[in-house]
Image 1 (cartoon, rainbow, N blue to C red):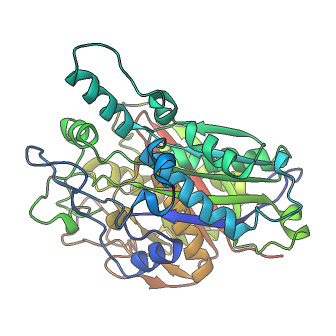
Image 2: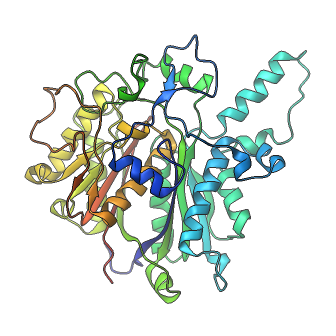
Image 3: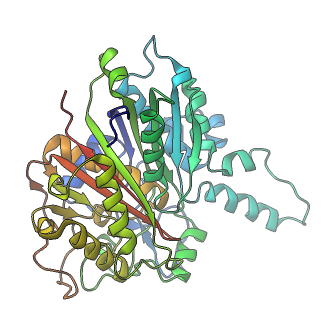
Length: 419
């Protein structure tokens, strides 16, 4: 890392996931190997090929918003605001003396307000063709409305925008936040991502691509990264939020520092709309870029939270890339896919997986990859994929990968904070 860059730390985290609606609930579910998959409750799945997903449970918007306010927010924005609120409160960014001109919000989502779009088009199609649309249709739909709402809730007037790179969206948001703070453009930024597309169009669309698991006889074991019989990912929903803050600013106000963000990397496969490069070229580049940005060597990493979606091609390509970047050290690190428990949150995946990586560093514990039944001969059996149970070990630094349709790759590295 270049010396002129400012040091950036984590002072708050938030999560609303299929495993729990707070960070402690989410972490407890992860380390206990709980599957968040179940039959879909949000719409009638009778005629769909896939009938299950990893939905957020026990969620009533009116527990967080008044009825009028809730109706003005798409579900992806509701989840975003709640997760961000957890992180902001933990970081103490509502305290007196905070210069709100220097606090920003950068938020990622791959699709945004799909629920709103579907509801409005259903109503239009059911009518006589007269265009009667809700005046909140567009403001509820657009991706950048989530960071807009977060900024308005607290009066944060720093950099504010949304990132879109499919399933890498929220990791790109984290990297952008890191960059802006390093360059002195902000003192703190709330970053992360959310997604809420467990809908007819979401399930039907991914089914049409043959991307989803169709293991309707056993939903809880359907997300099985690295297993020989994996047949696609399980769609998830939720949100993750992280407060990144310039170190001297956090220190001056006496903030509790949870961990440090060491660096981030980005790359493109430049290969195919949906398939990864078979030799893992984009994966190699993005992890190499992240390590270089962090000023770290492969040997400094103890845990890799992989993209690991449970797709036949993707899982193998990622592990090939890891072995090429990490060499012999690949056999010393713990590797796991928390998507085996949360499902795939698309644009929100990077955010909740970054939170999981931070917690692994803080707690010296690696969440497991669950649902492994049959070894895949295409995968090196010497790799520690942390099957079945969480493993306790010193985690000095954790690396988190996220990859998106279109060949977008993003990686972030978190490490233990040392004053």
